[in-house]
Image (cartoon, rainbow over all chains, first blue to last red; front, side):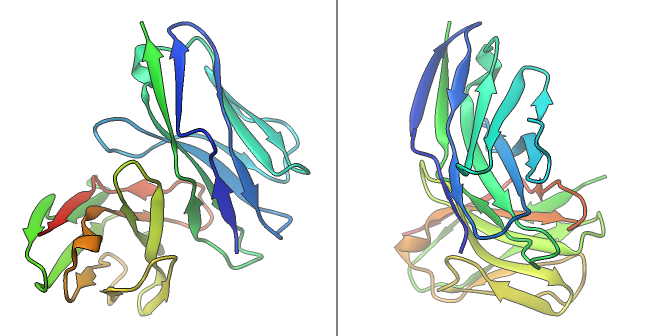
Length: 117
Length: 112
């Protein structure tokens, strides 16, 4: 079974600085997808960024980028120029592909990010 | 364009009571999911469905039941509420080919 591990329960970053959130996962599949979701105090789940495992290039969305290390099964999220609005719970998630017939999204336990003014 | 709608938003139950959390999506998504989120924790998959008439257990199915009679609806049933089921419940849906999981706003359930 697939698992997702986030070993940092809480992180802090100074406004305008850069922070990296860690995520590791375990799977026997060769093709899959990885995601970072943001959950602000409103509780709404918001997709931040996604990565296809078959793509070697790391995904980037504005100030958010990932460092995807397939061999190490590592998928970290880097937030540049942190803003107060980035304060939230961040979840790493895994999903298989139709080849494996696995469409379950498996989530990590989350990292709470605090942004200091 | 409503997306995923969950009702109720809040509910307090007594131990042993039963209730159904409703989930409806208007995006014609094949896949639907129920997650629970305990305070300060991640999301645990309770049940999921790949289409009408097809459901399967997730990581924490005990104490819950689901049905999927239509593409749009995926209700979650709690038969004998227990304090351990106090949580926030999220319904979500997606197309398998589209890498976007759309969530509802969540339902906060307290069992006393």
